[in-house]
Amino acid sequence: MVQLVEAKESKLSFEVALGKLESIVDAMESGDVPLAELLAKFEEGTKLLKACETRLKEAELKIEQLKKQKDGKVAFEKFTTTRED
Image 1 (cartoon, helix red, strand yellow):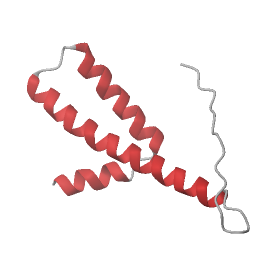
Image 2 (cartoon, helix red, strand yellow; image 1 turned 180 degrees about the horizontal axis):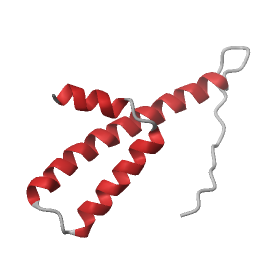
Image 3 (cartoon, helix red, strand yellow; image 1 turned 60 degrees about the vertical axis):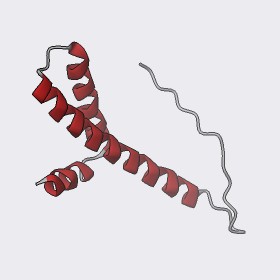
């Protein structure tokens, strides 16, 4: 059963996994969650975090591959974002 849940989490897009993770964190921070549910949410959140980290690593590797120069060297450039909170 655990492998089924992990497989389900690994198929989520980064955005969906991050959204679910954020909602879990909000619920946990509210303080209104019973202990048993809190533990289940923590476990689910850990799996979602792992899925997000995997997606980010995959994206990072793809960017490195795309930036490879013709001589085989990788050109690293500073990556900036403009995220509004």
